[in-house]
Image (cartoon, rainbow, N blue to C red):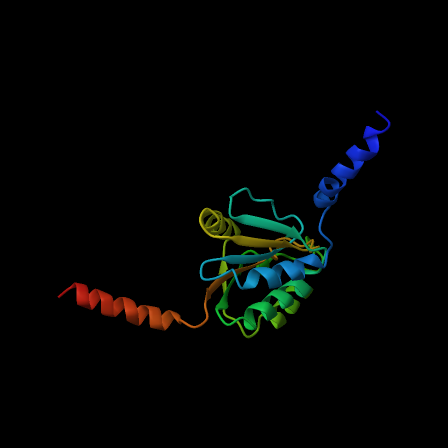
Length: 184
């Protein structure tokens, strides 16, 4: 038995190593690695520390151990440097109503995230509606969830990826032409 113990430990070492949590900087590598694979209808979520671990098969969650602002900035930078996707940004409609007296730092966060997202159109929806949309999308599309160390409620930034080289207006014109051709 004494001779088998070192062999067992040697064989088990790779399994123990793979079970350890990823280093906090590996989330940046995961975003960079995933960007070329992600496309239209995929999502990247930058969420607070209490965001639940979802169970839909297409949802992958990574702990970043980083600030919300750092992760949002890095993800937007990766999207902006891609040739194929652009960001449709959603945030919780509840956030403007979260007071500092109940969640210290909420007002400062709103100012910081406002500065980060000033050049984007941000759509506000009730939190439960966004979660339902993500749950549904996760059944057939990949969703990357990046958990941050944020401890203020309703601060998550939900990014639905869209095609960079095909605009919503181009899609509308295409559908109109198709409908016109089909009605002849």
